[in-house]
Amino acid sequence: MEAGFTPVEAIQIGTENGALYLGQQDRIGTLAAGKQADLILIKGNPSRRIDEIENVETVSKAGIGYDSQKLIDSVRGQVGIRWWHSGCSDCHQHDSGRVVGQQEVDKSRSCVHT
Picture 1: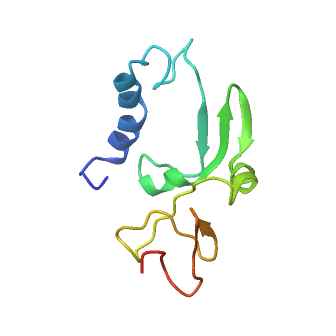
Picture 2: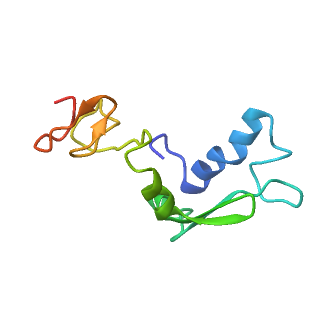
């Protein structure tokens, strides 16, 4: 979006164009009969408001639907989830009071870099 793409173009870049780049367009990237259909169900309409793409309610993998919040909760603190905030242009891993890599985040500071 920051590069001037419309929401629909940004979604296409991340799906269809991604499959083309990987040489997997016959298997993934668009919805069609015979293609692998791992999907996400989103609350909202990211084709109008791209920020709504973060409102994932269900993740479908190999025909099984998973509650996205339960998935996130099940790995919280175990995987490298990236957090964006306006406090530091260099920071992409931040959560108040949680270990980020091997460094404990000071709850009174906005970022491990400050």
